[in-house]
Structures are given as C-alpha cells and as structure tokens.
Image (cartoon, rainbow, N blue to C red; front, top):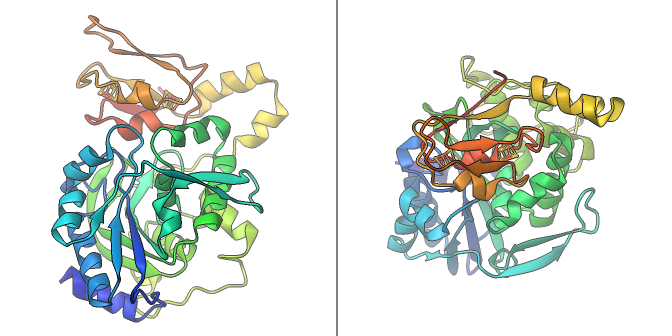
Length: 357
Ligand code: SF4
Ligand code: SF4
C-alpha cells in the first residue's frame, strides 16, 4: 500500500535513474525512538523505498544515519530501521569513517567532515519525517542532511553558529555540498508540538516527493500552516536563489498544498530575528534580554532518569548532574546556554520543558 503510493509519486516527479547505481538512504533517526512516536522515519516507509529501489535495479542500497548522542546501532534497533534494512537485503551502516568535503562557495563553512559513505555512493536520497523543530521551527529533507555529520561533531556547529540565521546558512552550505538526488518525506503520521524529539504524533496521511529538497520542504511547511519565508533555512535558500526563488513556481503534478493545509497543526511559535538585538545592544544587556525573551530549557526532576544524554550533547557545557538530589537532578547555567535545544531533542523521557517561565 505505502509502496504503491510512493511509486505513484515518484512516477509523476523526476526520480533519478538508480539502475546499477549505489544509493544511500538517509532517514531521520534522531536518537532512536519507537516508530509510533513519530520521531523517526517509519521503518515501513523505508521498507517500501528499499523495495522500489530493488525493483528499479539499484546495485547497492545502504541505509544509515548518525544520532546526536549514543550508538547508531541502538538507535537503529529502537526505531526498527536497522531490522527493516537488513530484512530487505540493504546494508545497514554506521557512520564511522569521515571524509573532508570542500564547500568552496559556502557562506559559513568551506568544508564539511561527512560520513565517507555519502561520498562513495552514486545517489543520496533524503527520507525525512515531517516534523516541527523547537530551534528551527520545522525540519525536513534539507535539515535531515545534518545527520551525515557523525555523532557529537554536530553539536559543535551549534556553538559556532548559535543564532538561527547563521545556523540556517551553515545548513544550506551543507545542502549545497551534499545535493541529494531525491527526497521523500514520511508525513503519514507527522509530529506536531514540541518536536523534533518530544512532540505529538498526528495522523496527516501525507507522502511528499521531489528532486528538489527545498521545494519539498517549502511545501510541507506550507501544509503545516507556517509562514514559510519565516523559517530560517527556507528563507536562506530563497535568498540564495538557486533552489528556490521568487520567480520560480513549484509544480504539483498530484495534489496542491492549498487543498491539504492543516489549519490547527501545532506549530512552533516563530520568534522575531534576535540577531538585530545582538548587534545593537551590549553583550550584558543582550544576555539579560535573551534570558527573558528566548525560551529556555527547564529540567524536571521527574521523570528524569539521569541518562546524561543532555549533558553529553550540550555544546555549551551548561549542564551538570546533581546526584542524590531528588528535587533537582540537572543543573543549568542559563548564562552559558545558547538555546540550541539539543538537550530537549535527545531526552528520552520528556523531562525537559522549553518555555519562558
Ligand atoms: S542547555 Fe540545552 S539548550 Fe542550552 S546550550 Fe545546552 S543543549 Fe543547548
Ligand atoms: S533531563 Fe532527560 S536527557 Fe537529561 S539526564 Fe534527565 S532524562 Fe536524561
């Protein structure tokens, strides 16, 4: 059923010729989660794509992603993705080897250290989940490529680019470097609310496909009800004008997004650009404003299991564990915190709330 639907989408769009080619499927696995939580690309979605690639004569199909913290094997097992890949005869890969890939025209990065497999294959297909994202508001096919940077190396980028706009520009540099041949978004059950790790599953019944990952993300964000140009990654892509520009029109051979909009989708509230304030006021004033204006993480003692994922991933070293203190298990230094929300992303038990008070 899913396979038939995906097949009909790729037949009506510019799907690459995979015959005798090697293909890397890049799902969104985050830190691993049960499929029904809608954190990860659903394994049955990946099964359907693998089967389609086999029918089309792909010589080699590799499936892999790198979680922010923890083992890729454990995340793959928890999400069901590893089992499906192996059952369907695809290769399950863990991103251990890294290759430096130049990005000469990058605005923020002139090179990336990417999983070597991404440079060995002929084709990369991005398989994102349709989700909200606390920091970037929305995550789709473009942001999904961030997982090609192995493990904790990812969190360093948050420290280097703490402002959303700069981080978005770095992600677009990465997108220009990787240039996935095709993207297929699993929006059958999406995530609304405080995504990408602790939002709420929502039955949306959508599969989106395109050879232009930016156009696909634009469309998905539009369906979710966002003012799309307010999403930093899409705004940056639009400004650069190669993948999307005001002159371009996105063609919809199947359904038009106007007929699919979900008006009550629980989106992330879009903050006004804080970059202006950062430049306009002294650092001490900006830090005070940041503490009031930009939502921050609050750590709940219950149900925290002291797994320390948040401490491991925090790029600002703002967190410490408080052992033998039932009232408070994690201490946070708000002056160091850069509001990247990586801690919230990787908390397995939803013990972190993002808010102002
Ligand atoms: S505490 Fe959380 S939001 Fe703050 S810098 Fe660390 S990971 Fe980011
Ligand atoms: S807050 Fe969440 S991620 Fe951090 S130690 Fe507790 S359970 Fe783990």
